[in-house]
Length: 236
Image (cartoon, rainbow, N blue to C red; front, side, top):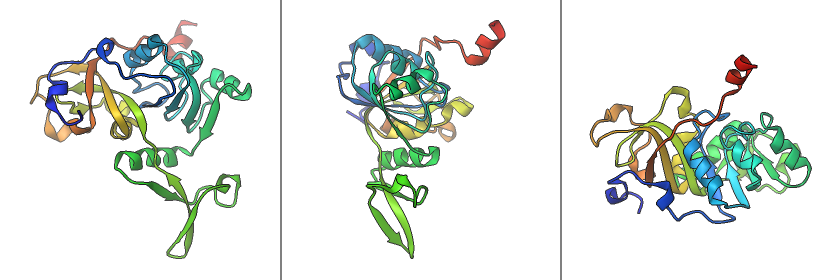
């Protein structure tokens, strides 16, 4: 149960978790693959689950980050801010194999934040007067019109961090922090994949970004199992 130290008294093994099922909604942290949890993503692929709804900042690259799930055709619906770095996502979208729902990056981040904080949604004016407003509920606040964007939550949130303690308190590695704190709070179940698992009390409380109350399981990462675009360019 969330908030119970017994869940995190020892590092969890993904192989022991029976929480995946076809048709579930998964939210993934990261930006272009940076800050995405490689070991957890591979676990989802190896499980064989399909028909997933994926919520993330972007579609990554074909074999980097959440892009691997798209390439393996495990995703039926993608909610993201862009897919331009993953040609496979664009191909599946145009072939009718993948439903893609786009949001401006700031709007997407705020919808996730609202979900994690228990809010029903946010008010936005971006897109008013365009096709974006079709079917959207509207309100007027202080004489200004806004669209209501419902909050986003997920059955499972998967994130990556630099350090974690057994209670699920997390520290991120610089820009790899990106969307991870927001995603961590918005999942019914949250798995944090950490580079280093430290003893309870080892983390500086002033440096903790995500508190353990938002995290259900902590697993140690096997490390990034892909090559970044700049590495491939150097080799090519």
